[in-house]
Length: 450
Image 1 (spheres, helix red, strand yellow):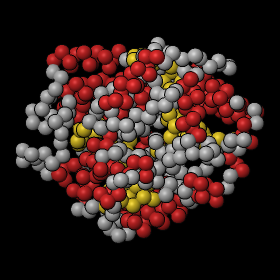
Image 2: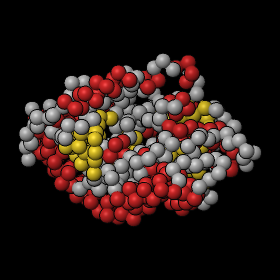
Image 3: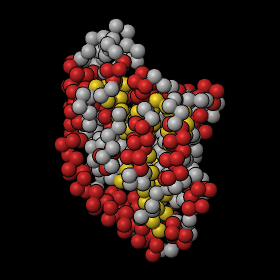
Image 4: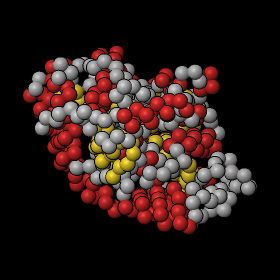
């Protein structure tokens, strides 16, 4: 169904953005004449901005609001815990909510003797994972994959090959990590991509055959200086990229052959995002360390590094070697426990809807071809579950960013992803239905048909 471009009210939003620009570092929030909105309130998938304009949220605010905005279970837990204790002393005098959350993580993660280090952000939890790998192995280098995003703290920043993030910090980051190319995968659901060959993907996107990638990985591991191999089971900001089937098992085999740990970054993919509780389940490869965040806190800052090798740190003598003032924050732990429990309870329901959402994308690709758009701009469907992306491999850099801004005018909050900004990302709350996808994909066709 064709949608008319709305005349958005912007007076209040522009006032707030003007005030923001006077007091925030200019490197933080991108502001243009049409972007961003100033969010005021939200419920479910619906967001209202400062001017009263309404939108459907296909980001879940970076995957955090997995149950949708303002979920009653989250709100009840928030009010209940806030009435008792808001802040505690996480690494000195623990709270019951911290213990309950850690017990829950021990039950649902794939480790026989799971223990965790809690943190506030995904980047901080990744720092804990990197430190743990160094403590366990006595080594100091790491291996990661091109396009991976693991946070911007100095530890995880060293894993990145995105100059947008690393520029200016190279002297600090040098000689700590080796970035391996991402392997080329079969594009099973695409329109027009059959005209693009392997040489194109190598030259334009740096994607190599997985045998070549594994050879480079083994070369890095052969030095026996690598403490851990870090990967997302499905790349998020890298553009909803999935690995070739069986690739992760080969990575694990090589890592263990040379004495390195396999670290899975499930900050984005965890807690139902890909259709299973954790994304590692799709390939059945259990990592040595699991890094969690985003949806874990139900909207509050909370993350965790989980594994059965954390005893290597030894027993605390009264000064923890990795901690923070807000570790095990009782409010975040209580809300996180409630949110994760609710996600687990409703996961079968969420999974059932995915077949309908698959059909929505199938019909989109058919309509894309019938309109002849595939001859102008090839497109491929990426990702799985509630983590999908429309990749435009032959488009100029930033293509999806422009498309996302156009969709904002039509009432949809989306984000671009991928190193070149050529993937239109969909990571809505898990409550999303096919009807919402039909609406946004119809608007994508409408915008591209112009």
